[in-house]
Length: 173
Image 1: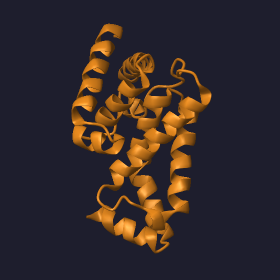
Image 2: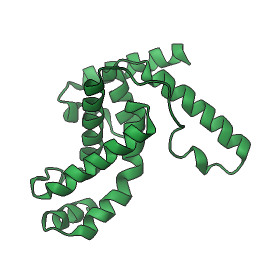
Image 3: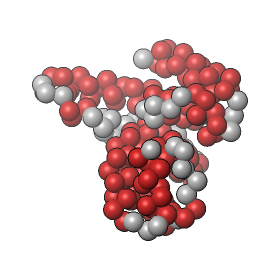
Image 4: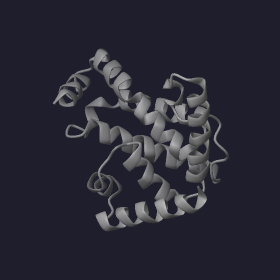
Protein backbone atom coordinates (compact mmCIF):
# COMPACT_ATOMS: atom_id res chain seq x y z
CA UNK A 1 0.00 0.00 0.00
CA UNK A 2 2.88 2.36 0.81
CA UNK A 3 4.42 1.74 -2.59
CA UNK A 4 1.16 2.60 -4.34
CA UNK A 5 1.13 5.96 -2.62
CA UNK A 6 4.75 6.53 -3.59
CA UNK A 7 3.98 5.67 -7.22
CA UNK A 8 1.03 8.06 -7.17
CA UNK A 9 3.26 10.82 -5.74
CA UNK A 10 5.96 10.05 -8.33
CA UNK A 11 3.49 10.43 -11.17
CA UNK A 12 2.66 13.86 -9.80
CA UNK A 13 6.35 14.86 -9.79
CA UNK A 14 7.11 14.53 -6.08
CA UNK A 15 10.92 14.48 -5.76
CA UNK A 16 10.75 13.37 -2.13
CA UNK A 17 8.88 10.23 -3.21
CA UNK A 18 11.74 9.38 -5.58
CA UNK A 19 14.18 9.92 -2.72
CA UNK A 20 12.19 7.52 -0.52
CA UNK A 21 12.01 4.85 -3.24
CA UNK A 22 15.75 5.14 -3.83
CA UNK A 23 16.66 4.72 -0.17
CA UNK A 24 14.17 1.91 0.33
CA UNK A 25 15.36 -0.25 -2.59
CA UNK A 26 18.91 0.77 -3.56
CA UNK A 27 20.66 -1.88 -1.44
CA UNK A 28 18.50 -4.72 -2.74
CA UNK A 29 18.96 -3.57 -6.32
CA UNK A 30 22.71 -3.31 -5.80
CA UNK A 31 22.78 -6.88 -4.51
CA UNK A 32 20.88 -8.10 -7.57
CA UNK A 33 23.08 -6.14 -9.98
CA UNK A 34 26.24 -7.27 -8.18
CA UNK A 35 25.11 -10.90 -8.39
CA UNK A 36 24.57 -10.62 -12.13
CA UNK A 37 27.50 -8.39 -13.08
CA UNK A 38 30.01 -9.55 -10.48
CA UNK A 39 31.64 -6.13 -10.49
CA UNK A 40 30.79 -3.57 -7.83
CA UNK A 41 31.36 -0.40 -9.88
CA UNK A 42 29.35 -1.76 -12.80
CA UNK A 43 26.58 -2.79 -10.38
CA UNK A 44 26.48 0.68 -8.84
CA UNK A 45 26.30 2.24 -12.32
CA UNK A 46 23.52 -0.18 -13.21
CA UNK A 47 21.44 0.80 -10.16
CA UNK A 48 21.98 4.49 -10.83
CA UNK A 49 20.97 4.04 -14.48
CA UNK A 50 17.79 2.28 -13.36
CA UNK A 51 16.90 5.15 -11.04
CA UNK A 52 17.73 7.80 -13.64
CA UNK A 53 15.40 6.10 -16.09
CA UNK A 54 12.83 5.65 -13.34
CA UNK A 55 13.00 9.37 -12.47
CA UNK A 56 12.74 10.46 -16.10
CA UNK A 57 9.52 8.59 -16.84
CA UNK A 58 7.35 8.41 -13.71
CA UNK A 59 4.20 9.05 -15.73
CA UNK A 60 4.85 5.85 -17.69
CA UNK A 61 5.28 3.84 -14.51
CA UNK A 62 3.52 0.50 -14.77
CA UNK A 63 4.54 -0.76 -11.35
CA UNK A 64 1.53 0.17 -9.29
CA UNK A 65 1.04 -3.38 -7.99
CA UNK A 66 4.61 -4.34 -7.16
CA UNK A 67 7.12 -1.51 -7.20
CA UNK A 68 9.87 -3.63 -5.65
CA UNK A 69 9.45 -6.39 -8.23
CA UNK A 70 9.38 -3.84 -11.02
CA UNK A 71 12.63 -2.26 -9.87
CA UNK A 72 14.28 -5.66 -9.39
CA UNK A 73 13.31 -6.62 -12.92
CA UNK A 74 14.60 -3.30 -14.28
CA UNK A 75 17.94 -3.82 -12.54
CA UNK A 76 18.20 -7.41 -13.82
CA UNK A 77 17.30 -6.34 -17.37
CA UNK A 78 19.80 -3.51 -17.35
CA UNK A 79 22.52 -5.77 -15.95
CA UNK A 80 21.77 -8.36 -18.63
CA UNK A 81 21.97 -5.67 -21.31
CA UNK A 82 25.33 -4.53 -19.97
CA UNK A 83 26.62 -8.10 -20.11
CA UNK A 84 25.43 -8.46 -23.70
CA UNK A 85 27.08 -5.19 -24.58
CA UNK A 86 30.38 -6.39 -23.11
CA UNK A 87 29.96 -9.84 -24.71
CA UNK A 88 31.87 -11.53 -21.95
CA UNK A 89 31.15 -13.32 -18.71
CA UNK A 90 31.85 -11.49 -15.48
CA UNK A 91 35.31 -11.88 -14.08
CA UNK A 92 36.29 -12.64 -10.51
CA UNK A 93 34.38 -10.54 -8.01
CA UNK A 94 35.85 -7.19 -7.18
CA UNK A 95 34.43 -7.01 -3.68
CA UNK A 96 32.20 -9.04 -1.39
CA UNK A 97 28.43 -8.71 -1.36
CA UNK A 98 26.82 -5.79 0.35
CA UNK A 99 26.12 -6.56 3.98
CA UNK A 100 29.30 -8.53 4.74
CA UNK A 101 30.59 -5.52 6.66
CA UNK A 102 27.63 -5.67 9.05
CA UNK A 103 29.20 -8.44 11.19
CA UNK A 104 30.61 -7.51 14.60
CA UNK A 105 33.79 -9.54 14.69
CA UNK A 106 36.64 -9.03 12.18
CA UNK A 107 36.98 -12.82 11.87
CA UNK A 108 33.31 -13.14 10.93
CA UNK A 109 33.69 -10.33 8.42
CA UNK A 110 36.67 -12.06 6.82
CA UNK A 111 34.88 -15.41 6.62
CA UNK A 112 31.73 -13.78 5.22
CA UNK A 113 33.84 -11.87 2.70
CA UNK A 114 35.64 -15.02 1.54
CA UNK A 115 32.38 -16.99 1.33
CA UNK A 116 30.71 -14.19 -0.62
CA UNK A 117 33.61 -14.06 -3.04
CA UNK A 118 33.36 -17.82 -3.61
CA UNK A 119 29.60 -17.65 -4.17
CA UNK A 120 29.87 -14.70 -6.55
CA UNK A 121 32.65 -16.44 -8.48
CA UNK A 122 30.53 -19.59 -8.74
CA UNK A 123 27.46 -17.58 -9.79
CA UNK A 124 29.52 -15.95 -12.53
CA UNK A 125 30.15 -19.39 -14.03
CA UNK A 126 26.44 -20.16 -14.44
CA UNK A 127 24.59 -19.50 -17.69
CA UNK A 128 22.97 -16.06 -17.60
CA UNK A 129 19.42 -17.49 -17.52
CA UNK A 130 20.13 -19.59 -14.43
CA UNK A 131 22.08 -16.80 -12.72
CA UNK A 132 19.21 -14.38 -13.29
CA UNK A 133 16.55 -16.69 -11.84
CA UNK A 134 18.68 -17.59 -8.81
CA UNK A 135 19.52 -13.95 -8.17
CA UNK A 136 15.93 -12.77 -8.45
CA UNK A 137 14.70 -15.56 -6.20
CA UNK A 138 17.38 -15.37 -3.50
CA UNK A 139 18.60 -11.79 -3.52
CA UNK A 140 15.47 -10.24 -4.98
CA UNK A 141 13.24 -12.38 -2.75
CA UNK A 142 10.82 -12.86 -5.62
CA UNK A 143 8.57 -15.89 -5.83
CA UNK A 144 8.83 -18.16 -8.87
CA UNK A 145 5.45 -16.95 -10.13
CA UNK A 146 6.65 -13.32 -10.00
CA UNK A 147 9.85 -14.22 -11.82
CA UNK A 148 7.90 -16.15 -14.45
CA UNK A 149 5.58 -13.20 -14.99
CA UNK A 150 8.45 -10.72 -15.20
CA UNK A 151 10.49 -12.86 -17.60
CA UNK A 152 7.42 -13.94 -19.55
CA UNK A 153 8.30 -17.61 -19.05
CA UNK A 154 6.38 -20.55 -17.70
CA UNK A 155 6.77 -21.24 -14.01
CA UNK A 156 8.15 -24.69 -14.90
CA UNK A 157 10.95 -23.10 -16.93
CA UNK A 158 11.81 -20.75 -14.07
CA UNK A 159 11.84 -23.61 -11.56
CA UNK A 160 14.01 -25.73 -13.87
CA UNK A 161 16.52 -22.94 -14.34
CA UNK A 162 16.64 -22.47 -10.58
CA UNK A 163 17.07 -26.19 -9.91
CA UNK A 164 19.76 -26.68 -12.58
CA UNK A 165 21.56 -23.55 -11.40
CA UNK A 166 21.61 -24.75 -7.79
CA UNK A 167 22.87 -28.17 -8.86
CA UNK A 168 25.70 -26.51 -10.79
CA UNK A 169 26.50 -24.25 -7.81
CA UNK A 170 26.76 -27.29 -5.55
CA UNK A 171 29.36 -28.82 -7.85
CA UNK A 172 31.29 -25.55 -8.04
CA UNK A 173 31.27 -24.90 -4.31
